[in-house]
Image 1 (cartoon, rainbow over the protein chains, first blue to last red):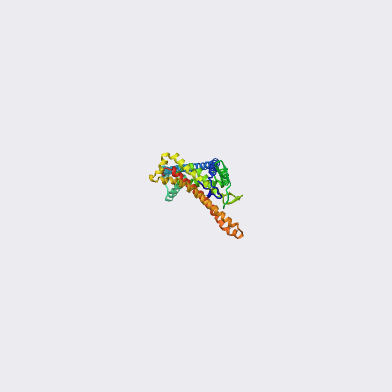
Image 2 (cartoon, chains in turn purple, cyan; image 1 turned 90 degrees about the vertical axis):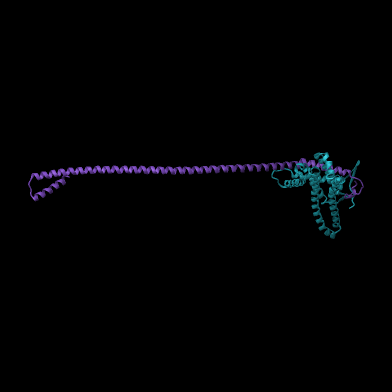
Length: 173
Length: 237
């Protein structure tokens, strides 16, 4: 393999075995050095970043699932609370109605009782008054009769007597 | 263009000192770029770290296009080193192309030397064969030479050598031609004021194009390396 006539600047007619060796050795040494000092660390950091990104994505996914779960929980809780509140309002309303009915009934009963007792009292008073009037009438009649019996009197006297009696009765009253 | 090469012969090995020098410089530059870029690495990358990570992901993309990452992951470091090394090597010849000391050409792209590119290509072929046998077994490896039909055997054998040759010579040809033309344009620019003005625009255009070619060839070399590797190690070939 004589390639020297192709080489820029070469003219001799022999095979440059040394160049082959030099190329191989220099390239291989460069590759080993770069692997140790450059590509190795760089690949390491890229790997690390890949892992970090994967981890972050996973964490974000987890957080998303968790927050969705929490949201669901909160929704359920809210629903429960709302139902409970509704129930409380409902029961309070019912209780209020019951209480209202009770109060109304009690008031009505009380009113009836008061009315009845008032009627009874009025009745009693009335009877008392009638009895008193009756007594008065009796005593007046007795008085008038005694006057009539005690003295024969004229029409004028009679009328005066009546007037007197009445006046007396008024006084007596 | 007819410059000598600084050669040194030790025993039966002949070294082109210019090539060796440029290889060493390339290796140092690549190492420094990678080393400095990967100092104080952070999970939140900044500056040069971003660039190196982009290179890594780029090579990873090339590998993933050819084989699954489980088989291809082991070639990641080879791929990154190859693409960086060849890109820097290709660009290295541009700034001082054609520095001649005592009639000997010292500064050039190391990839403008077919010995270098064919060595890299051979290395790729050897690696592909090694991993093919290691991962798929000897029987499967030799079985691929008679697949899908046994009369393809000569073609398959030729293919092995053709792949190696084209892989190396494609890179070499591109860079060598680029430097020849750059040398010619520089020659025009050196002839006088008129020549300088005449050579300025084509020179700039050609340097821009050479930078582009340098990166593209580094990409193609890495890409084809992975294609050849995947041909040998993947189950579906």
